[in-house]
Length: 242
Image (tube, rainbow, N blue to C red):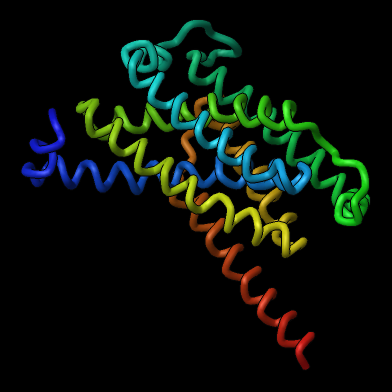
């Protein structure tokens, strides 16, 4: 299916728009992680890390689309443990979830102990550029597999999937710097974002064990928490002005 065919087919347009929205929503998890991790680097490396990290996400997803039959096969059971059949997708979800829980817990401990103050005053940076890109790449694999499997469940047209992935990642690229700067300016938002990553990690672990967690509930909770934090931020600014 070529671009002209998609633009002249109402059903294809609906599928494309729906998939773009879904890819953007699923990309929020990745974007939060990239923003938090890039903010730990020296200022002159932060934008570069975000660009490389999100660029790798697009390359990863397009590469996975080229072997889509293999990706679909990842949902087939490969072994059974404690009366539960695990697929390679489950294993990837479990590994990614455990990594996110470990990373979010470590970062929360770091911020509670006051490690962010030394960075703000020019102290030692907590992570190197190579380590940041490696961690972003590891999570790109997890989120990309989840993204492509979701896309396969919504349409069987590769062209629509490719366009949706490119558009969604482009939106992420544009939103990355404003989001990172907002997180950097508001320390309490950092803790909220880490809480989101912890929740996402637990969700990935649950899905790895076969439990279906409706994404609508997850993102509704995140949106509500973000709205409350936004109101708190406005209240603090008004108090400072007063």
